[in-house]
Image (cartoon, rainbow, N blue to C red; front, top):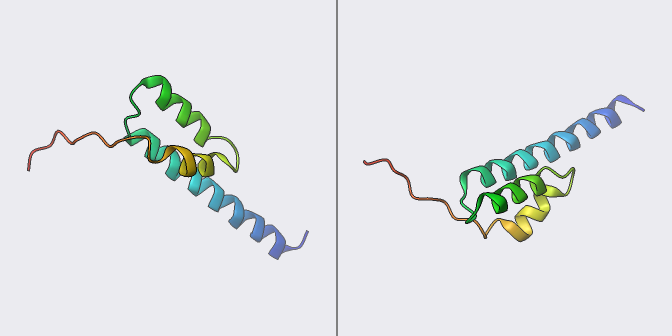
Length: 72
């Protein structure tokens, strides 16, 4: 394996990791109606390589962001 191939795989891995963490953070901040549904979406996002894509396609619009309790 050449060094350029190695760095390409590192970059691809980092992209998949970043997308997974973004999807997981989105699940963490949204309300899905029940704890079970939220846990299910959290588990789906952590599936290697495809979890973030499944969440973006099927689950991203299902959750709602709860209103903030902060006053301006």
